[in-house]
Image (cartoon, rainbow, N blue to C red; front, side, top):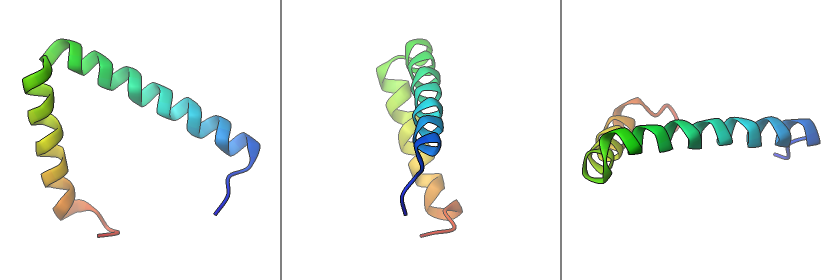
Length: 52
């Protein structure tokens, strides 16, 4: 699958927003708690990912 130019622009925009949110959370939580959050979310994905 290939994205159109507009699709790539939107994906880049969405990814930028996701990075900003993660940076904000990391600044608030600190490295250890952010790592714990990422691990917990990865574990939950094992039971919620429809493509697994």
